Amino acid sequence: MKIAIVGASGAVGREFLRLLEHRDFPIDELRLFGSSRSAGSEITFRGKEYKIKLLAQNDDFKDIDIAFVSAGGQTALDFASTITKHGALMIDNSSAFRMDPEVPLVVPEVNGADALHPAKRIIANPNCSTIQMIVALAPIHALSPIERVHVATYQAASGAGHDAMLELEGQVRDQAMGKPLQTKAFGNQLLYNLIPQIDIFTDNDYTKEEMKMYNETCKILHNDEIRVSATCVRVPVLRAHSEAIWVKCAEPLTVEAVREAMSKQKGLLLMDDPAKRSYPMPLHCSMQEPVYVGRLRADLAEPGCVTFWCVADQIMKGAALNAIQIAEYLIQEGAFAK
Image (tube, helix red, strand yellow):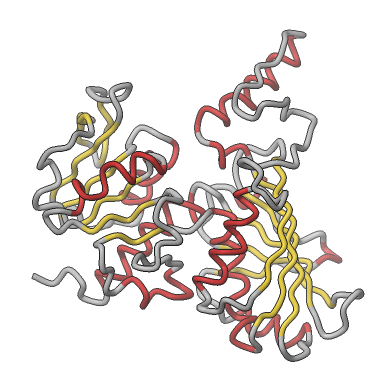
């Protein structure tokens, strides 16, 4: 397999490299690409030094099988034809193609088959907050079609990139030393604070992040009738997003039935023993692959409905890991058989 990574020096790009090595992904040739800021720098992978090349409109992607792209929406749009013109499969981590009807939007444990025949040679990785929620919702949806979801997210600094994580760490140091705090990444101080805005606001007063959760859920579950109401909040945590989720289905559900279904869902791990204070927390779920669920219980405000707590590492399952799992699924299904 000949693999390319676009945005190799970023937080997700580095996670791609770490996971590809950790999972022993089959790679015969690796090419790394970045902006003018990172081009020329070197990264070590499997004991070998690789130089990052400048991403350009040329034939650098000729003979590439899979290009993992995490370089922002505009870059994805600008370079999609360059990346795919010789047949490379582009797995894109940005929002650029997620709602394109000709581009599959894939969480492999849930709708992997959608990735098998991408018309444009592009597969979109869903938004981080959507990915973990969908893994948790899928077994519920299989019991009875989901009608409504209410979700409040508690999203870590990692969702805004490597520089945002560094800014939060810098705020901790500066606060301890009595220095002014830098607030470039979020527009507000994140330390000791919660910011009820992720991305820009749309005309309906929901943010783009919140609307992604609505639209992407419908597309992944192949059901335009699902209604998702989200409030997305940035919290002073380095890695791993958390979500409080309420679900209403067409038929009443019991907690016992949902628990059993969740226990069988691939990629989902129940951590749910409140009496022993066992429930998912970002501190323990960071750098872990599964989506974790706890605090599963009946919804007191809506009989026959359930509510639960969900945590997953944003850089891993919320980004790089999901993309790599898409590629692994396709390899397993023979999509790259020569």
